[in-house]
Image (cartoon, rainbow, N blue to C red):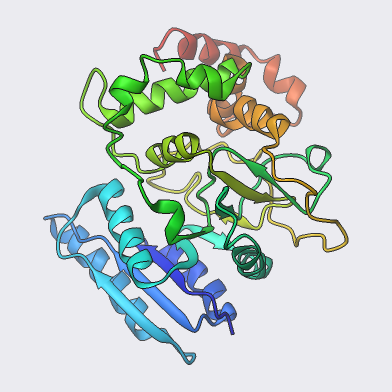
Length: 327
């Protein structure tokens, strides 16, 4: 039985929830918290949300102290998630957080539990992440550290969220300083990426975007917090490429979850893996144009080799449209 408290964030997706639920059921958490955003005004949304809530309330078949927070109306992605997280950490000092489309393997739960205890009093560590997209060659240890939190299945402490401002109110002033120059150093691609999404999150030049994760990145960078990430990915994202997904449908570069190798030592020091950050930036966070074109196109091109894909006229016509902003 899993003794670490677990928060499950749900909304209206019963298909992915059922798969995530089975993983939680196998872990048998002793303390289960479930938070669900409210429905929109249309009947279809109300029925979908009601089905999810009935499922959660009727499928706990193990000894469990269950707590539910059902929000009465729709708050949107950002506030729907944050109301669940703030409620959770108002009840417990530390715990694991899963969304209804983040599917963990069994090693995820033991990894989070072990490291929550190990770094409980280490103020520099703000999160234990379960996802990793970095090749093994970049990671000689069982896990390592990043300056940016990875939120596809994670664990944290109440202390790490103190001072978190989802509206990033001081970014308007801080963006005029050399803050990101100092933090990012020579990783210009990541600095450009963060400027863009920090501006969107804080409403610089327009209405604020519905993000909660980029304000969390900002919070980590300001406080100098680090996130742990495992050598092998312990979580898969079921929302990638699915119906209604907001991310790319090209998912072949996402790693398959694998058990964590137990014969490797932990890192001998607490310091961010800057090589891993550079890899994640180029591959996922802010890829070059030719990477972006390949990601956008690969889902509907079915050639047998990468060479055939890049040598096809169709690929380069689409790549040109993307470059000109006409996709």
